[in-house]
Image (cartoon, rainbow, N blue to C red; front, side, top):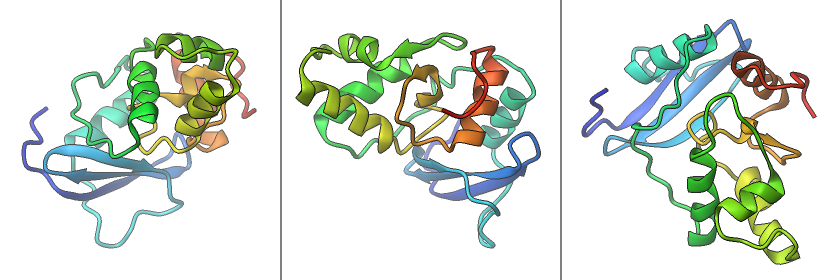
Length: 160
């Protein structure tokens, strides 16, 4: 998928989640993903990444691993989100396991706060799959997270 130089907002409504997926690009990198009720009037609905998200919601396995991201978060949160991106499709980790994956001490309250803060502030859900973490918090809304978990065969499906 070539998005070299792509900038702007792309959005499309998806029946599977009863919401819109809105993706922001800057310089060919995804900088945000959100789930508004309706697409903004000026957003383009035609984009390869939205097609891939549609296929993903239809059950096609996709980890979005090669999609370029433009993360503008503090370094410690970046470490958490990069570790999160390495959690494979259909697998889940606990918050403490995620902490260990990024080299933090799961028994250190400050390290756990960094991990939960990164999850809560995740600017690019789906591509940085916080729905694969058990015991959140999450940037992905509960109903959307439930559908992502259902698609990947992760239990429970319901929002927690």
